[in-house]
Length: 352
Image (cartoon, rainbow, N blue to C red; front, side, top):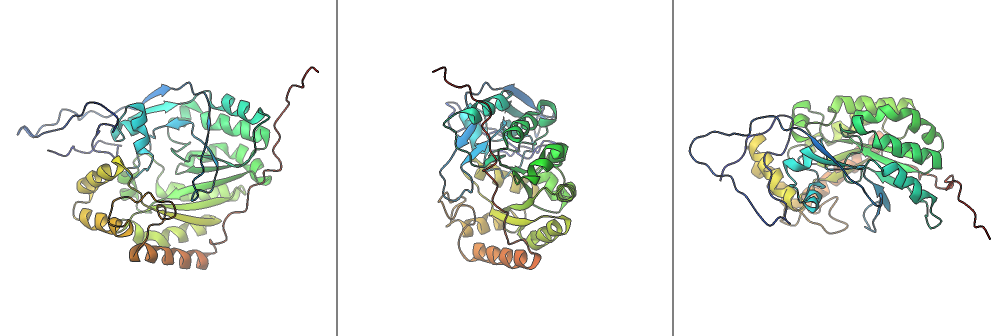
């Protein structure tokens, strides 16, 4: 067995088969030390005719009931992304396919409008970016997130946005008025402040410095920002925890949260390959510390522990986070969004 060389602008080094595929392939060393797949990988986008657009969950450790994802797959290519395994449902690989073979939902805004006009609809905040980033690079072309925000603004519907892209600044003209009515909050994700590490971990996301500038820009326009230190990666990024929180506070973040790295299903193998490619001397140390926080496994899916981990190392990270956020004033949390302003729009009356 051989490991594939890294592709420029991509984090996954391989393209393992999805777990539902009937066929499997393996690379092997024929002794020639030659790779015939050195051309840049292009992004391919397919259009999806979705029937519904709002997803609902009852997970006890997730702070929202409804979410909306304009895209499947994510061109940001974060190697640690917990959403990678969902690409297997499309018959595609959670590896390079997740970063290069994307799906867009062009009718998302219209589907949302119909859902909000339903007599049965009950207003609770909807989360944009719960699975993949709504401001990934292809949003520049498709503008689906922009159209969704226009509908939410029209209906005065509260929402949260989770992103690691500076492109969210494009929609300040919509977000600022919504923020005045307490209808929107932005979760800006920061993994590391080191540009070189970020470029390898999340190759097509905005640089750490650019994200800090985005926090400042949103703050200037009175749009509340919660910084997500996510994921915290033991050994690799956990030493930056206090530095990230301090930088976010200085640029205008209002509150902070963190998530310990999760490695569900195929993500575990992909992340291990990434470690062996980019930081081989630290690979075992990183993996051992992750297992220390996950009951000896690469991933622990249990509610209540999956986001924070458990054990001595996880407890130390939690204590450091509490101390830092208290010192910086980032421990107050975000105010509840206002659902009372929601209007369902005109609904045709019955004839009789």
